[in-house]
Image (tube, rainbow, N blue to C red; front, top):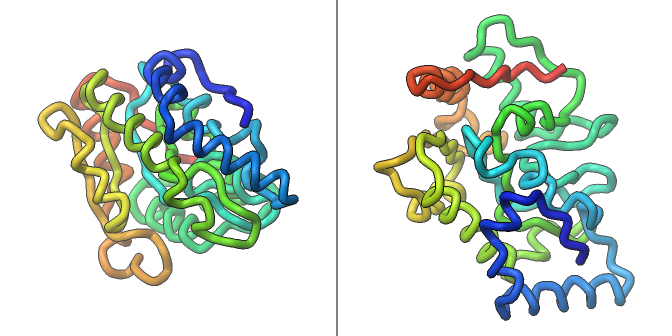
Length: 225
């Protein structure tokens, strides 16, 4: 597992790489590859969320659970897929909410959310790898401990970040966040199974921008081009 990690995150999380759980995780991933398993995303993109959004540039955090497990989909950002890949159902719900929430938002032609990350939106999955065609196959192997630590240390180091917690899984991460220093927005998950039960109408995108502007920060341009 090649560690290609942006400097500020590498400094914040340095001691994690020497812990036993990370050594066990590395051994597990090496075994997967030795057995000929196809792993998504490619190793160069595993830490993509961190690499696009440095610690001191982070304004908002969106938490997902697992990378997409289809060919060419995952590229290390939650809810996002590479250009040329069909837009997944949850992201279609996100775009629909954006159309209702942000005046003038135009439905994008692709599902690559990199533009958000470059404006300070950390798009973090709890588990950073997955076996092709097998959702959840790399859960409980150590990734969750790593990403939980990242969320907790980000909360400690920074203030005024907006955390968007969609669905019960993401909301379980609230215990890692200092709610006296940060803002928490909660809604149902954008999956087709739950979007009608509290995601549609949540207006998290305009609310995030209102919070950022109240704190003297540039709002996020949510339009994907």
